[in-house]
Length: 551
Image (cartoon, rainbow, N blue to C red; front, side, top):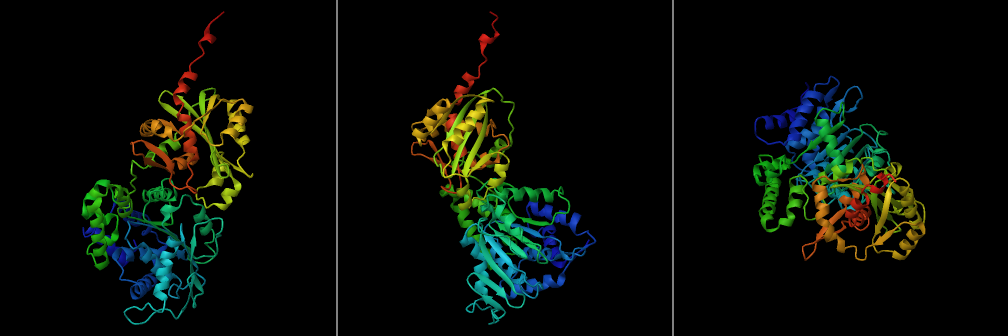
């Protein structure tokens, strides 16, 4: 097995009981020692490791053992491929762990002659410009004339520096930032792409676009840096699933290095000694920055009894362990995931109630059929989205893929005409016993006339929001008891995860959007309308007794 002194230093700190690691980092050590460091074709480029550490400590900050551990694997080389062994790095840890500062320093080093790759362009990609510029500005400030380190010198001379691009003159390598808009950003010829705060990414589209430019320059690398977040079933959750699969040994020859820090159990939030599991900056001995960080975290923790609404934020961000406020969501993510993956039985000729949400005819419209068998509910849904809205709005979910899967239809029209809706229900009538359709009171004149012409019974809810409080106990129950199925429909899970629950003064619940433009809820509200008459399904679904009588 090959060795590096910084790798050995960090592992021995843990084995000697000097630091505490969470399960995923313990699994990482076992994975590295059992699968990677025993390979004949890999070696540590010790010269680049030393140069990188010296560069960071000269211009940025003193490095910590966990940072030196990660740097060593950035320069773990594959002798057969003459390239880095790990091409992807997932650095996931609690807020305050120094992810941005670390990636700033690494990025700066990678564009220097010390790395030794010309035209090694780096893109920093985030969901917003403020986040995308965080690491960029740190490099900019370090290179600016007014920023000098303790030697009285600054590294500006070899650089061309502007507010949008940093270029190393010697290597012609640049650092730029992008926001995550797949409609306006193409994959270039980057050597490295950094995705900052991955928990904001709803889908893989931007990541696929930007990574598509890698491979044209030697030593390609991708970094994912993030704390966890409140968005469920997005790219962050899929990445965590991938990490766990890699660490379990089920993925052979993976080129991802997953440094994943978190609490192992929510109960550990009350044990300060466990906090370093989520944030390696808190590993002993604690230096000045970490002392201030620990003091801040303590204050936030001690305030929780008086600010209970902040607990989900504290646990999710500081402890990197997602927690959702049960009073602000439809259901926990795992319950929605079960509904998403649960398949339908044979529903042919079964009675059902239709649901319709047709409020925004210029972007989304959703419809569906609600079936019921005792306490089991089956929601078979479909959606329509206007092509122009899709092209002009930065939606992260894989809309085109969902369209290919038949979960939605992309409409190339000025509006989502009501005929798309009625035609779908008429098609469903040929297979199922559609008794009626329930709709809200938006565009009642258009909807009612179209359904009358199609011969489909329609019931309009005069006050849609009034039914939310009535249906909330049923919705809570069917998710908690796993009694609702979406029939392998990730689009419906996305709709449901986008719903926020607002408590009303009288204690009832109201289902609203988390975001008015990008986080659509149409499918959930269509289901809500159908649930309003769910009890009628059992009546309609009774067998026709007269059919058994011989006249």
